[in-house]
Length: 385
Image (cartoon, rainbow, N blue to C red; front, top):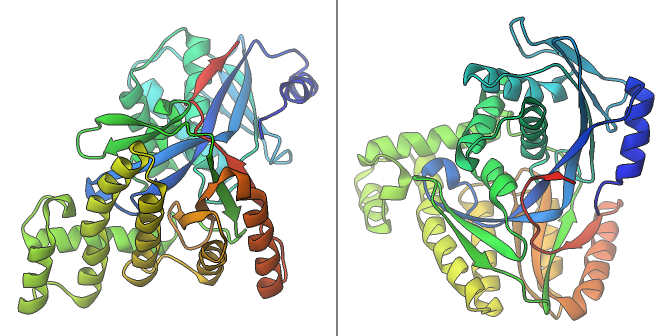
């Protein structure tokens, strides 16, 4: 589902009394594999999806930035480019403020602007709506200023904005796939050096289903930050730069010698094999070995549930329901966990039946809907003609 441009244009005209001069789009993403390993300098395998955030914009003659969103129409924001840019209310605008502050710090000649956002992404659903907002903001500001940025530099800038202005210690995966995604491809990203490999994923016989539990989360909350700290502590005690550099023999020795606290060992027991699983999954996807890929997905979800403890009853139930369906290869939590969405690799011809089984089973257990939508690998962020 894409954003409807005509409606966005009309709303911009209503808000600002003139038409926008341009539009940019930035997609959300699902994490096919690589849960909780981006900040451990491992490999991740995300895919840009067909749902997106679009920004309509027009420059101003003064130095004000005005921000509004069709999802928060009562909570507009405004700040001056020549003043200190600081987080505040409304909180959704802090992602945009952080981007503006980062661009200004690097010397971008920002101009005053009116920007209106619209999105087809479920907010807080673990599909990187925050990264899409950041990247859309950056592209609109760069476009209006007549400047460009290298892709990975832009990803780093948006990541820093989220760290400093939204207090969310995210890894680099979300911003990178949002910017560098390609149609018909997943992206194998090395989170240590930023190198990428586009993995073909254009087989029309399979489709990705995204099931939204509607359990909302924020990675700014303590669960994400505490796990990140536990991983860093484990790496330090093991004498490695990051858990990327550890192996399972090291973990066995640490368990035997009591080097790691029990909770640190649990986290490492997820991260270290998950990095290997992600590379294996990329190979299976390239070979169109969906049975193997699905098995890796399920192993990953079990580890996120048991070792990393970032699942919940709703997520586990969706995975179990998917696994009961003919034509479902595998399923796992997508994103940071603690709620959000499950990603399912499915036979395209059986996707509707799988969706119905999951939706009805979820409603019977929890008494509320679980929206499900299909998607294929979409292109990354771009200026729209």
